Length: 147
Image (cartoon, rainbow, N blue to C red; front, side):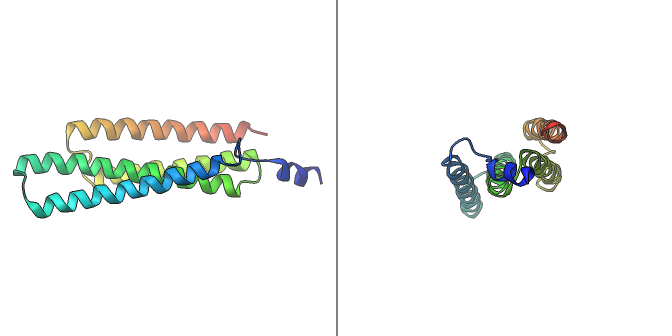
């Protein structure tokens, strides 16, 4: 009885309108991702860049698209966690699982998109991978120590 009352009292959001800003941020990131893909396709069709300039542009654009996709997934995942979490411990565990999945996907994307082949993109990709890994560890640690 006390446990179910605690579940009803739990809210993930500090203010009721916070969830709508998180959802809006996720939708905006998806829109930006689609715009970046469209720009990439337009430049590819126009063939206005030399081969070395195209290689550099493609690497930067791949990194930008990957970051937009990751950011959209984070916002939309947090929105879903906030909607469905019934307790603080459940929310923290779900955050850890979300970060673990996104960390694995980020690592795979780095190799699949060739983000590890160019110096600048490799550094940014590696730093974001390390940050995501640390965030995952922290989220799981917090979920074990929450009420």
